[in-house]
Length: 216
Image (cartoon, rainbow, N blue to C red; front, side):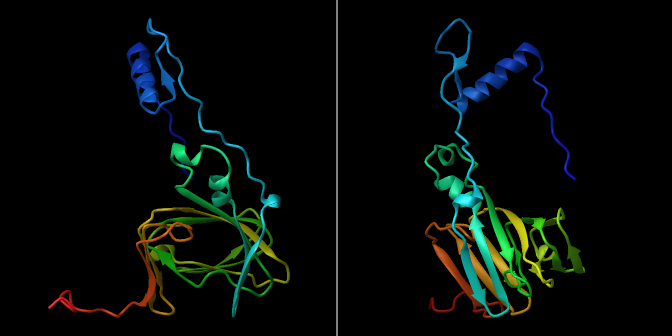
């Protein structure tokens, strides 16, 4: 469990420094003069996006099958100025539903992006580097970057399994798939994003060439 952080303003001088920092972000100004500060621009709007208004997208490939609603992407695409304020595009959140007997994305981990899962309804199983763990409604799982965060969710019950997936969205990332021995490379946009990428693809992990290959 993470602890909440508090900030001490530090008297009048500290308050002035705080207001100056807010002014740098365009939230406050002292155009009125006399040392009196008044709101300079509206804060970013944060209208809710309701999942019931979004369509499911479906993925099915062998034992992998699920439905997904991209909540964070829908919030950024909403007609507000939130994305331009920064921060709205730095966090991913999707609603997933696994049918009975099906599995999520293949077992993998991210080099640059952490992920977390929160079970909304149903039960299932989490495959992780330290073994298999039961999942039930209300369970939360944090997957760090690197091989210690490898994961796959399996619905081994007769009822649907519904959960939220949250993730950071660092645009340069490598995904590693221990079972198949491949890697995914993403540059220019994070995994799961729709933006155009400079580099994107999946490769055999041991497909290595010399630095000077093709250059001489």
